[in-house]
Length: 167
Image 1 (cartoon, rainbow, N blue to C red):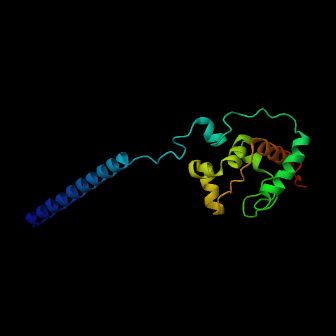
Image 2: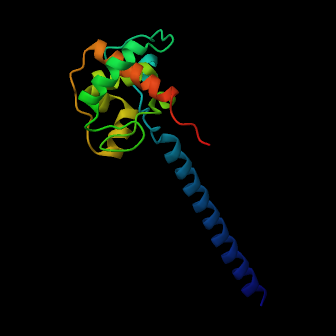
Image 3: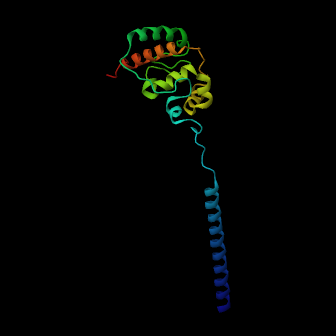
């Protein structure tokens, strides 16, 4: 009987050590694999600090915005109706996103770069890529001049400030 108990104890100890050793090796392998896995690539890699926040395009420095210019607002409204209205409304989603609150989400320079360089933004800026993935239609390049773009920005600033406040 003693030999039976002794054999059983040796067998149990052997299984226990093998299992522990195996788990330990597996754990080491898992930790090693996790440590050797490459980190997720930075979606903003290759962009300058300015481009990350302000977009990619001809607007390369922060705008000095002052009080809303009503003359530019009127020009911007006309340009918006001519160039943007087919796809955008201020307060509702159409082909593209509503634009009334865009300046609460994006910097003015980003908005201008999106208008002036939609192809480059969609191709190279992670936030524009996400927007494209959401709407599935690229923003058309309307070949805006810098002056037209600035007027549309002023119109959007005016629309944002005069949006209906929740009651």
